[in-house]
Image (cartoon, rainbow, N blue to C red; front, side, top):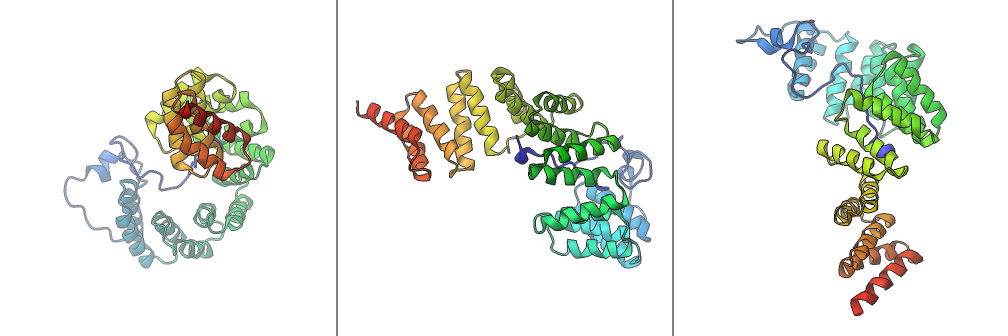
Length: 337
């Protein structure tokens, strides 16, 4: 579904903020299973006293969705060992999750201590991306100077290139990233988006299908394959994929709801199509085509009163839109009949 359905795959040391499976590796890095390490502490443990112990405990706290505790532990660790760049870097990462403005300065402090820390350069790019896209791109390029095959830097730069329409170069970046992390769902998904934008629908679908073979509930891949199928007029398959995506989550962008509505309307499921268009209008009341879609679907169902508002709004957005004017006139004629 284009930019808005991008799967922002991350390669962070602190990977998950969801519950940790009992048999999963402990996030502290000990190599033990969680249940045999920090997840299996029967009673009060000895308070951590070294920077390394504090770091390991912070990793666990972050992984079990306790970022405030993780940040406090990292602040203590960096006070104990201010010369350790990794402590400042991970402190910056947690600050970033809180959208704190000091995250950038903390990350730059880490880089001052370790200028060749690829992980820190990648993190800096993410921290400053919204404020300074050019600076973020420069940070990821710096990471590639140090490690030319770093998958995270390649992934982020690939996204930037794809967003600018430089699809060939973006594809190259994603493919290079996959050499280091084969089968990575986020990279595969975004490679599919770049291939689709280039017009290679068959290879794009193969990428999405590969993601889904490994992760059947990958919502972005489901939405992207649904959009691709809809564009190829395989409406029944598309609707099935849309519904699977919605079973996972519902926070999709306007394009998703419009495309789903079109597929449903092609199958004659007009009431469901109308609801999909209504969601598109709710998300983007100033989008012309969303209003026209909704108004047209109301006309198809002979809901002439309900067609009035979206078609009127469409004409406010584009007073010279002949189609909207024709549909609005048609609806008013039926209301007066």
